[in-house]
Amino acid sequence: MPRITRAALIQASNPEPADSPVEKIKRAMIEKHVGLIGQAADKGANVCCLQEIFYGPYFCAEQDTRWYETAESIPDGPTVRLMQDLARKHEMVMVVPIYEMEMSGVLYNSAAVIDERGQYLGTYRKHHIPHCHPGFWEKFYFKPGNLGYPVFQTTFGKIGVYICYDRHFPEGARELGLNGAEIVFNPSATVAGLSEYLWKLEQPAHAVANQYFIGAINRVGTESPWNIGEFYGSSYFCDPRGQLIAEASRTEDEVLVADLDLDMIQEVRNTWQFYRDRRPESYEKIAATTVVMPAT
Image (cartoon, rainbow, N blue to C red; front, side):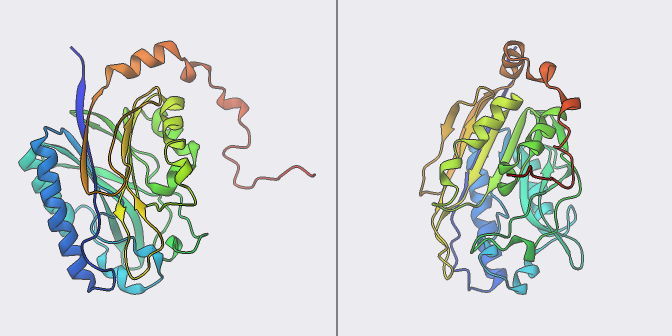
């Protein structure tokens, strides 16, 4: 009998200006997502993933300590507890990206994973932290992740998480595959322009190289007062052959749902023996902390 997982991605705009009180923004985004999560459940989703730091704007467009107020602990903070209740209510696995406070002054860009019984399974912390383009000042807010590349066993498949800028680094995507991931979710916040041409290039390539499904999520709209660009949505699912099987709109809030046939992973791996033929003993520089470039 085929193993079919119905998965959902939620892309959404921020209904409040980013210069509103942070608690007002957070409350409005959480309320909005509760309704969208209900829509995913109504569509029969077994697994649902939200966008990067779903309960706020992309505040890394500025450097302001007021956004520290939005960080919460995992798993005992109020947002994760709410999502545990919703997961239990809808009998749906939830991937919940939030701003995590491990302790005062130690903050991460994270995603909590919750099973359909509302049980907390664990956390992924974003590894690769950009701080190189106007409007992407993430090192002001986040420590680099330190929990490795965990894969979470659920009733509906083995789930891994990679967050936004992580997607530019194939090493972690391979780690997730080696750890047994069948579905990898990449919640993101990215604007039109600089890296848009990579949006449908890199992650299908990860899916092909590692032979798993990917759910890529991007928010929509523009966020004042920064207006760093248009968050262009276009969330999608791709299969282990790198083919897009469902895609959301560029501009609208949307709950994107697709049926993922997890048996396809074995079918593809029987054809392309990448894990058999890889040569990790020959990749000497991949794990080096210092790379010496050859002289020109």
